[in-house]
Length: 276
Image (cartoon, rainbow, N blue to C red; front, side, top):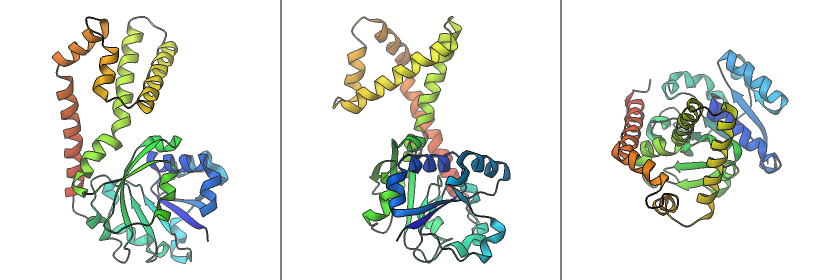
């Protein structure tokens, strides 16, 4: 039997999920029959309808009470602040066999379970946007042992890791979930410097992109640790060493540490907000 997938709140993570699954459509549709989206923002819904055309179905909120369809796989990808009693409006779409995958930063399993008390299969996830190109990093935590067959949707879009203690989830959010943005910001900063020094904008973007992709390939294909890889480039007395030493003098690692600490603090703030 092929089940249907429902995404509730389809922002960037939601579209990344869809893109990743459609990239692997032959495998995806062997076990599932349809991707469904429940998106209340009209502007966003119209954008998604144009982007995916007939590849995705949309659940209309005014028809939920009359729906007889029960979804097997449900991804909660809306904003954490929207984890509230309004979810009761969607209860007709679920049953006790529904598996929930939550990507709500800062929201613990116990908080999520408050809204789905009859469901035993609730999985907390942290993943990142490279799932859109099937290269995502996916961390999960669950109180119940989950069958391998319930992970095929995740295995299609990246590498899956189990977290043994939920207490580390805020750290995982800061490193894995936010991680791509740190790299983008570094590249953005280097691009601005290149342009300010006189290089053409499109040329600057291309050489930075190629540098990053090549570096990622080395990381993917080596057993060396990051420290040794850095030393391979920063030869003694050279230009790269001068740049690294400048970063050290300006407390680069401390800056990264504080940025991750602030991200963790934000996640804890989201978690401390009472569900209602």
